[in-house]
Amino acid sequence: MTSAQLDVTPRGEAGHAGHAFPLPHTPGAVPSVRRRVRAVLGGWNLPAGAADDVLLVVSELVTNALVHARPPATLRLWRAAVDGHGAVHVEVSDLGPAAPPGPAAAPDPDEHGRGLGIVTALSARCGMRTGPGGTSRWAEVLAG
Image 1: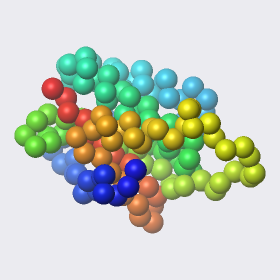
Image 2: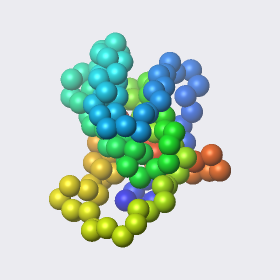
Image 3: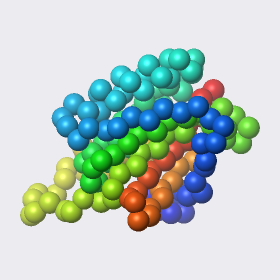
């Protein structure tokens, strides 16, 4: 994903009720986080298709942070407006890229490397911010 494909303008959460979830760096973390997010989205009465898109974006951004970044990581969700339409803002923050592992076989392209492309395809806008405190990847998914 290139910067030309991203809207990297950060969006504030002022005035929007949100939820924050610390992300455990443990096996099984993604399904657990998905269950918690599904409960939040149910309370927001999102259409089923929009909720499914948000859950997939959450899965991809959380997996990216857990696999490629240094802990701790946090997921934040809030309602947003994108071009006058309701949306859900999904943001995962971490301490930045982890040190690359030692010599290993190249990852299988059929199983890895498509997550951020999926996020881009499902999002009205998405981007990344980096700073001294780490990295945040975010996406805004239209919610009906």
